[in-house]
Image (tube, rainbow, N blue to C red; front, side, top):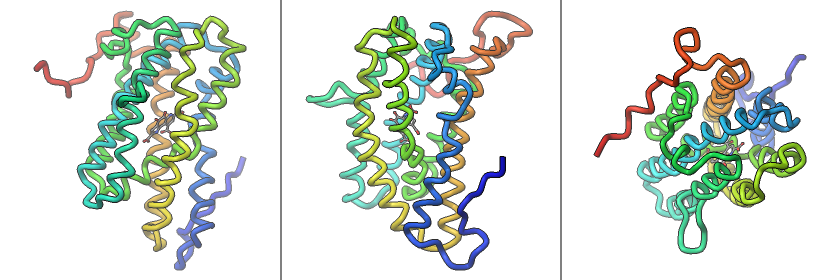
Length: 262
Ligand SMILES: O=C(O)c1cc(C(=O)O)c2c(n1)C(=O)C(=O)c1cc(C(=O)O)[nH]c1-2
């Protein structure tokens, strides 16, 4: 199928704000909601073990989100932006009135039969997932804060994914405890507020053809991160080809080298 993409590339005049917004939105066709693993999830085709694999691996993404947002804050000299962006840390790490997204994801883990310590140990995190998530975190740490903000814009499409899980899981996976849905509900409103801010930044700073093209490339990079995470899970859990499967059934891969022993 031929895919048409709105792109500023061929032109010497930048897209209007509205056309640029459309160009960003058109990237939604590559969102991980269209990945076969995610489609199998929505169709009720995943086994309990496969769903557990997704929850345990996605937890690494959850853990890294506040760290990459902290990196963006560290690189941002504008107090007004920092004041708004810091909310993202609180959303995930929690505060007096909110348990936070990481805690809610741990509840999702328990609801699918994974004890907290299993998620926290990161023992199920596949190397491919870890590398993809780390690529995102490292990009954000090194990029100008405006580019880092643009890389969060896959969140434009995330409410669709959360709503899709809320709509399909209870029917397909009735064994999942109701407490498991807290995270997806919480993100529906948070993601909408986040993208309002992210879009405001993108539309405000991307005023040339080159900057608009750069933003589209950054968004594609982030889509690649999300897609690659699911590719790694597909290999391990659907195709039964986890790392080193030709050698051993044991999970010998490293647990991450960046966390010191202290
Ligand atoms: O479940 C999903 O499909 C999904 C996708 C994404 C995304 O598009 O990056 C995020 C989330 N969830 C999410 O819950 C979340 O907090 C989040 C933060 C960010 C980001 O890049 O800053 N993406 C996402």
